[in-house]
Amino acid sequence: MKQQLQQKLQQKLSPQQIQLIRLLELTEVEFEERVQQELVDNPALEEGREESLDSLNDFNPNADEDGNPTESAEELSLGDYRTEDDIPDYRLEADNFSKDDKKDDIPFVSASSFHDYLESQLGELSLDDTSYQIAQYIIGNIDDNGYLQRPIQAITDDLIFQVGLDVPVSQVEDILQMIQEFEPAGVGASNLRECLLLQLERHEGTPANLLAYKIVDQMFDEFSKKHYDKIMRQCNVSEEELKQAIREITQLNPKPGSAWNNSYSGNTEHHIIPDFYVEAQDGELSISLNNSNIPELHVSRDYQDMLEDYSSNKQNQTRDKRDALLFVKQKLDAAQWFVNAVKQRQETLLKTITVIVELQKEFFLTGDERTLKPMILKDVAERTGYDISTISRASNSKYVQTNFGIYPLKYFFSESMQNDAGEEVSTREIKRLLQELVEHEDKHKPLSDDKLCELLQQKGYPIARRTIAKYREQLSIPVARLRKEI
Image (cartoon, rainbow, N blue to C red; front, side, top):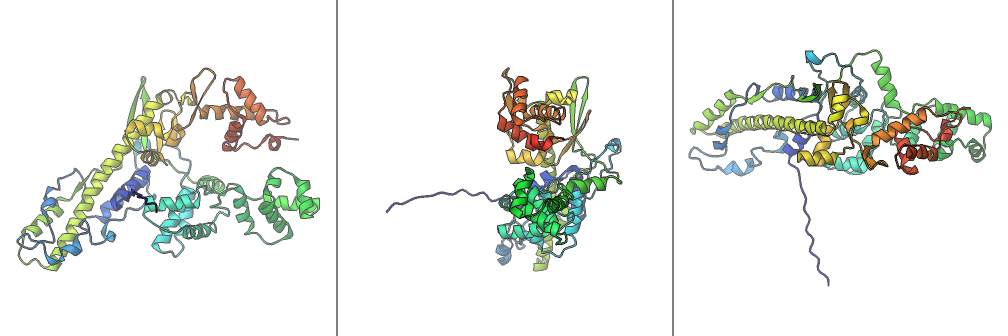
């Protein structure tokens, strides 16, 4: 018999750690509203300078007048909270707008309006709290084109880590199917084929639509390569029937989210609120957080006095009195935690943007994207001392205003490769050159991947053909045969 000893180390985040993570993920606009909401929800939190909470450490609501634990102490020992429901619920909301008069002329491409539209449809459904949180998280992972490109299993794992929900994959799949019934048609698809099928399912069952569905469902590869003869043979249809089916398909929207954003922003003015400001002047850079609308916070002196007054009066300590004292302490603890969490969030963001600016200093001074250096999350994490996941959350959905425009932080991240001179260059530079070659090619004789590879190698970039194909797909550039014009 063989004996094996297995040790498993498992880390479980506390509710407060999870809430701190969620605070870090918020954009400036969302964070402004989050602070205002906490000021409304917690009367022990006030605007102004921070005050000490030393008096809280000496208070025990479960002690009698002599300071001895009562019989009810055990049931009230959950970290001064009876249940997790007593811990404040820190929600993600984004309906507020900045009132920063100095920066109110920044043009905004509406990046969140599409998601607001999906959330508004979600609000019309009757869901339990768990299903609603799952749906919110799925919507948050849908990109601006309307696609959900993250695997369901990955989303299920994230729900445990980031939201504290341990649910089966099947439940997440059910919620996704519900979201795929939202407008615009095709939203929530994982790829183009599924997006087209979702739209065709809503059309009338005409012969042309039924054939179109069959082509996309069963012969999508042949359709994308324009092998029409093969489709006609396998489906046993005429050229005219095929044309009608193709007409059905070409009228579909390959990017449902993008189309909605364009039509939405056409008649409405929006402004993006940057999370950071980086200003270049006389060869020097100044960095700051956009926290002009974030009030200074402190714990209420009145609530502290109330706690001291209650706890000093040891006579007539009834159960109701202890409950009242516990309520006051809970509010004070929550207020102090929130003040500390706000400071930690601001410190993490400032440290992150400072390192990014240091690594991309030349770009912030010149605005020339050719000066962007290769930079990945690990590079920033090593210099800040934070975990890679922390840098990811601090960078996601955040914007920085520079002398040359507003950029998402993810714009500055890219992988690297070496040119013939042994210098490290950003893959962003390779993609830019690739885009230029395609834009200036002869459309009657478009450049093949092999030819593109050859031309880039002539420019000093030793790049493989398969890498060209990968970058071309990331840039949404079709293969040469599909770019050919007759």
